[in-house]
Amino acid sequence: MESISWFWPWMESNFGKNAATVLFTNFFAALFAALLIRLCSKLAPDLNSRFQNYLIFCLGALLGWGLGMFLAPYGAQDQTAFAQMGQLASVFISGYALSKFDRFIEASMFDEKKPRVDSWIKVGLFVATALLALLTVVTNRLYFRPDGISEQFNFSLGGEVVTHKYSIANLSDAVYVDLLRSEDVAPRR
Image 1 (cartoon, one colour):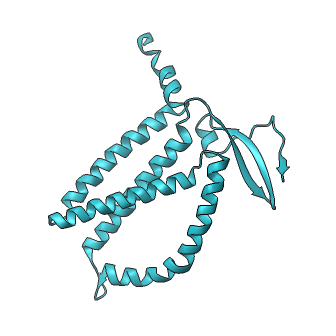
Image 2: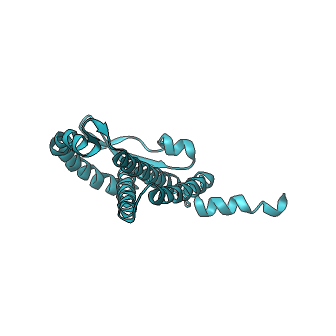
Image 3: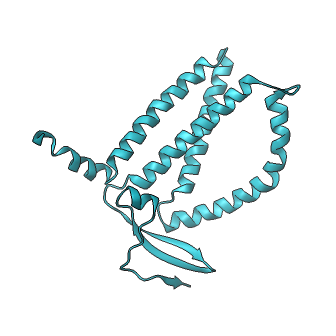
């Protein structure tokens, strides 16, 4: 047992306090990505459909990656930039895209009120890939901190911007931001 006592300290120094979470997430992400790639080829009747499935896989991965970065910003600078992009996206989605979504679903997912199986398979591939990328990116951005980085977190409280310093030191700190008691909460103007 002593021969592997070096292993866990090495893991923590290279992957942070949540080394097991990071490694298991990335292992299962690779496993599920391989499964989804295999499904892309097996669920397609011909070469054209197979390439459509690969394209949908790529688009889902890109959307999940972007959403993962949006949901887990590294610091105050990322948080500000992502908040502005989020406001622009929400205006577009709630205004134009949502009004057209109903007709798009009717036209592309159903034939004479019967569901088109191939279309629903493509939606399933897209959603599964987006969720896989989202979970992988969020987990890595929250838990993969080998040097115990302390960050600054700004949020709006009743019109005032409040700044807290926090560190992601373990699993509970990543889920519930650990506000350090040594710093007083001071509104920034």
